[in-house]
Image (tube, rainbow, N blue to C red; front, side):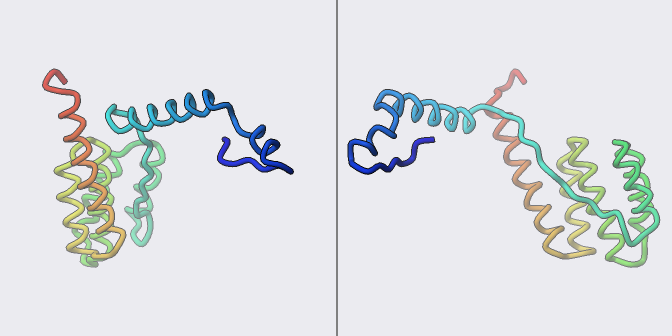
Length: 150
């Protein structure tokens, strides 16, 4: 909005700025919104990626995910967990962690994320494990804020 103003003179520059009252009102509104976001629950959209290559069942599960058939996809990923290639099995474990997160089973998601890290340790799997820890913390904080009634 009005971070600065310029003009051929000090007076001209001043005319480009909002009135003191308008500036105070706008600042108050912004501070109120920021504070409200910190103390009140709000919805935030998160993006997630999953593995859909290197194995036929991973590729097949991709179409189930696109149709929002997560349980069907998870059944295929469970089969891939026994693949002798730890990289492939790790990808399946990672995808299963994601499916558990979507179901709201954070303990299950973390268990599969740990399995993915054991099988396929990379920055992606470790980063996702950290995201899950942050979500668990945020959910516990939300429960605390909402109180025992919820």
